[in-house]
Amino acid sequence: MLKIAERWFELRRFDDDITLVFEPHVVPLLRCNIWHVRGRDRDLVIDTGLGVASLREFAKDILDRPVTAVATHVHIDHIGNHHEFEECLVHSREAEGLRHPVGEHTLAGPEFDPTDIATLLAPPIEGYEVAGPMLTALPTADYDMRSFRIRPARVTRIVEEGEIVDLGDRSFEVLHLPGHSPGSIGLWESRTRTLFSGDAIYDGPLVDILHHSNVADYVRTMRRLREIPARIVHAGHEPSFGRERLIAIADTYLKNAEKQR
Image (cartoon, rainbow, N blue to C red; front, side, top):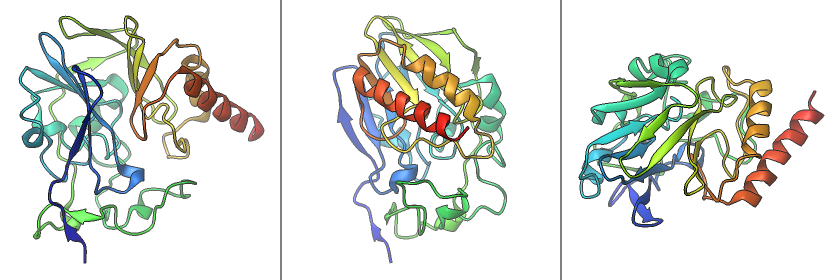
């Protein structure tokens, strides 16, 4: 019997403009980093978690401007609360998965049973536990994990490589970073050398075995990422890291990919 969580989300401020929101009661494999970036004219919410509880309600005190919800890609752990936002941004290759989150776009087919995350992945991901429930607590006493579904979101902006996301006093360049998924994107702010990388790169076991993953694309993405002069990388999972660690993660992936050729 799972316990009832006192609160579903936690937050951690990096500075006045960047806040991390996360779901501590979701297993690490699906515990997405949700990033809030404050701008002068509007804010970004980069990925939105599983959608087990309302992100909009939890974050209402920090969301005091118009908000664009960015989907770095459309796997289920990243788009669960996009439906709560009026403005949603996604790459063209994954827009349909945000509008209609079923099947291959979200890894959640009609028969998906969210009480057992092992149904998501085959083979298992080394370094992540994939057996048992995906939650370590429940948001409410009457919450039924078997009723879990990702709700459709309204796509208001489809982006491609090189487009700019303007917040008034901050601007981010869209980087198309395929490999983990076809339409994975990152957001790069050259002025502050800040990269929001989604699942293209993070400090944990990188996933390239999904049915729509592509190792050749991932190799190209890693080569590109290791050349970016990032001061800080805020990723889709695990803690943030700097340029030295960015290069080390990319080089490890490239070395392993070469061995498997």
